Length: 352
Image (cartoon, rainbow, N blue to C red):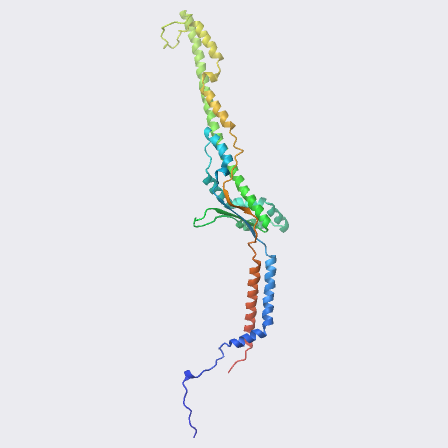
């Protein structure tokens, strides 16, 4: 009768299950299938290179600005110093002009108008044969590459960075400079228009005042002439030919001058220029003439100062070619490794 072996506790027994991973075996499998892994990685690398070379390029030209200095506004200040003396006072200060420039720079209507009239857009429309919808989509997409943002969101550093992106370095710089001048010209036109409107309103007011005073003066002169004629008649009837002394001049028809004096007075009144009779007419006409001499068309200014003037970009924003090639190669390598491991898992013999 055979002796029975003693029982061994289960925790002392080491068993190998089919679900355990043998790293050495996996490395050997990958090594044997290295050609497949390299082939997949190579295909993805070539695809990445092709995309990096063919993808649209984006180059960005930048400039940093701050509130304008006195020299930037000097031509406008010269006109303003004269115009303010004549009542044209709606000249904005440097902060208002600066804030307006940044706001107008970011306005979509301005970006669309500038892009639509640019040679860049016209050449692309002609080359790509874009229809009306395609043109709108293109403008909407490229307008995203025009922006004016604060340099430091926390406000610790001054300035606003202006950005304009296109598909080439030189064109990005040209478009940024062109768009800056486009916004400045629009600001100048708006300011001139507003000031001319104020000038026109003041001229209308002065001319209306001149007209009313002139009419009143004409009526007053006419009444005085008529009164003098009646007074002469009264003086003749009273037989007063020479001026009288100590005569009450509060009468309605004062005859103290006598007929000879009154006739001379009548002659002077009939020959008198209206501006001599009413001197206010000369003052008003002088104000009108001075106001009309104020020339507002030549107003020019730059609503900012450069902290960093525009320059042609030295590197593209997109695509990042080295990064694209590296990432696609890594993706291809991982995919190749995954293919090899999946094939090995399905081809691996089942263990009992």
